[in-house]
Image (tube, rainbow, N blue to C red; front, side, top):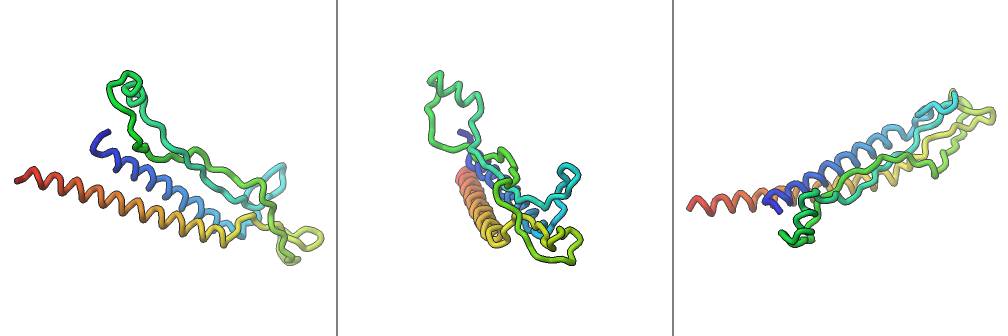
Length: 154
């Protein structure tokens, strides 16, 4: 494990949380979008998107060294990575009665996106707090490394 291992781990978490905040922001911005995507010639409302995070696997050289007995396996993580950005196809669209809307059907109902603004705000706060926590860890690690360098100055 290198001296910068924890910084790399924290940096991967910062990158993942930043992407999570971007996706949530996109969901919030499109909460009222009735023409998100065209499917079979028909406009479909915007569908909520979410990201999937997965633990990052170590490098091949780490696994090889453990298998050869050169190093012991440690419990340190390797960070996270985003594996996919998925559209929510299970939650139905909301129907809103608005006969004046250009996308209203014959009964006067408009299909709105399946984004729940309250859930998105909670997820955004969670992502923001996680981002801030990782920044705190990164700065603490940077401070420790700086102090370690000062020891050598004598």
